Amino acid sequence: MPFPLLSMVLTAACVAAEPAPRTTPVLRHIVLYKFKDTTTPAQIDEVSAAFKALPGKIPGIVGFEAGTNVSPEGKSEGFTHAFVVSFATEKDRDAYIVHPAHQDFVKVVKDRCEKVIVVDFWVK
Amino acid sequence: MPFPLLSMVLTAACVAAEPAPRTTPVLRHIVLYKFKDTTTPAQIDEVSAAFKALPGKIPGIVGFEAGTNVSPEGKSEGFTHAFVVSFATEKDRDAYIVHPAHQDFVKVVKDRCEKVIVVDFWVK
Image: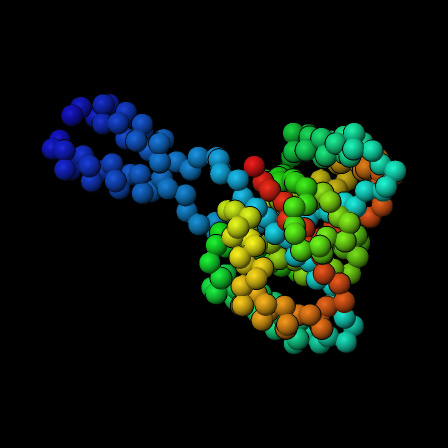
């Protein structure tokens, strides 16, 4: 096979293998926590670690991100910790909510946070 | 070139072209809105459209997602609209905040929302 032709074959094959723009919708589940003044840094770390362990315990989680607020805008309303859990379907999200591992996690965080906000939205 | 060899070359070339796991950190900028009771659906749509136009006007935005709350948990605290803008650096996020197009957008949303929450966090 002459090299120009090989080159064309390689190019065509690899274009097909390149990451295509995401065509399947994803359900983002945003969770923000404002902790009580009485909650210690160690207890907050424990909550973060317990949340981060959930993807290893619950099926159907297709993405997981977590971090602490670094916004300079002063509009966080005391919410310091953000978690974004992603699902392919609402059924997976619903199964996550009632999963025993999630319920155990809720028991850990429940009395330590002053406020929680949960907002889910579809990215299509 | 015999076909088995061509196949090996194609395979090797295409494996290299597959998307690698993200190794560079990304800064997520979460914005949640709770609109005033007096804000009309048309005015809310206008806010969403204006926000969604920002990636076309402001450089340094490497990701943009937006949607309306579909959580069944009842913990959204009245926040109905979520936006997640992503940046590669804090410098890009800072430039976005002070960009005239963003400032113009803030003027549109300012009197229409009752509450806004902004939380930024690094995904590393």
